[in-house]
Length: 114
Length: 115
Image 1 (cartoon, rainbow over the protein chains, first blue to last red):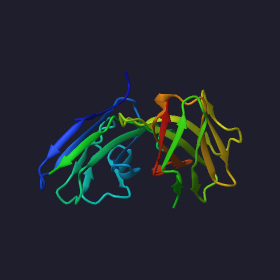
Image 2: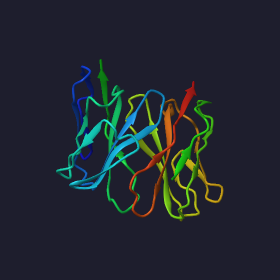
Image 3: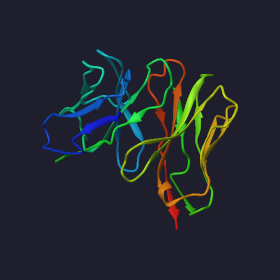
Image 4: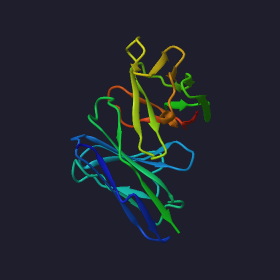
């Protein structure tokens, strides 16, 4: 089955530690995205990548970093510089960076930092 | 910059009835795509329906249909014969065309379905 996987589903970390969230897709999609969702709120874009070895900051990139070394993978690192890292994180992909195809979403990772 | 506004934070509907969720957007582009996504309690985002701005005909998918008013920049979602499984948060989203880049999402509308 094709799709997007995010692991783990729940992640707990101590304040001051960096943590990396995994996102893998086997849909052969060019573009990938990371969103943050806080309780009862919409999606805010953290980073996106339209092609391998290239990525752009979204609306709330501070305290986060990404890499796109492979087409299938777009890991997100939440650094200790992120002031309020506890949130639900969604990864998404879309077929073609030039066209406006819909985004496909992973199941999300709930990160709790204490 | 594009903005998407969902003015109804919460809506409720009786099972089997019809409900309409509102969405307005602001853009200077002439070509773009609009989407409605559903996020049930599992939090898995699912595409409900897609509308290309160049198409005058409103998109439909089974019980889901849209009322796309390009001049008014309005894109409402109508759910007919509401079912308990329709209970979810619904997000309206915009993507420009071509060179989509990032999407812009509204803040969402939480839909409750009453049995």
